[in-house]
Image (cartoon, rainbow, N blue to C red):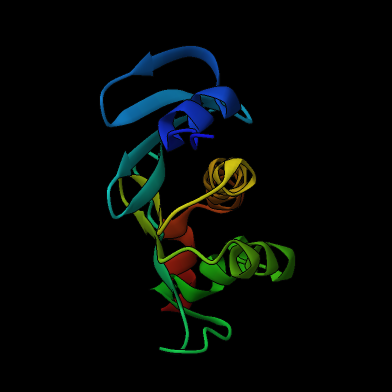
Length: 149
């Protein structure tokens, strides 16, 4: 019995019009365009988030026993709202190597994955993108920074 390739699995998870290359699949999940790619050393899922004023990096805490998450980001108050309790629990359960929010998008990296893990990774990046947009639209970042002065 042969094992399905991660891109084939991602193609079953993503909807809409799929675009496929030798290393990636682009489709929609939870209303977001997700770019899923695979390489011999891991998988990644990304969603574009234009002009985000927030940034963060999430990595597992600990070398041997991965317990909890190390979160670095700014502005801290907004990052913590994006990464509230249920989202943090979801991230810990998925155990990604890294999640990054940059001004251009959210990128999740993982060492491998089953269909359920690929589904969870695509759902997570789509949900994080939606949460970032929703929280940033509640109160403009420039107004938040001015309030600190």
